[in-house]
Image (tube, rainbow, N blue to C red; front, side):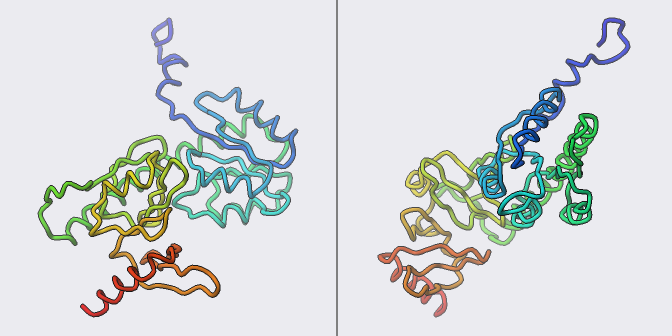
Length: 280
């Protein structure tokens, strides 16, 4: 409350405000400095990364942990619009385009941009755009939680078996936009190693978990998961076919459409699995 008891104080309001993790992308250093100056005045905002071109911005997004990206449109190489088109909407941050040109607005909003700001950015307009981003992310998270619950229920119904204690993991806790999500092992498509981490792919999404791939492999049922490469595990029943690559290693094609390279020493085993399934 305020000292006169009329309402909540600014400090109390900021404690309940969702923290926005923001990344800035612009090839002009003065524009980046102005955005940093504006964001320094915004409560509940943390700048978690900066990039000077589209390729570096793409790497930031794939690293994860970004809620909102303030993104310039005209940049050398990959433009801001091309970057937004290249990202799966389910994995993309909320995009706020920042540009000196108004003619790109229609294209930006076709890509479901949260807002479109013209340079030089007015601090008041930036505040409005960030509030729109908070609302959009809250709505997206609610829809995502409902969809995830429906997927879990559908997977359990499809299995039509009572849960048994096999000694192997049946679920994995993964980070998800600052929260923790319980991911059933039955929904995992494949896993790839990223140094001391693994990236778990499930139903078009991916989650980065701090764990070595050999450690995760020991937790998963070998009857369900196959190590096809030093850096890749795939769920056996997700394999659709083995694709040959001229002059290079073959790859398994999964139900999701993902192609995962197969080590030469594992190719024969993968062929046997596919052959056995075709003959059953």
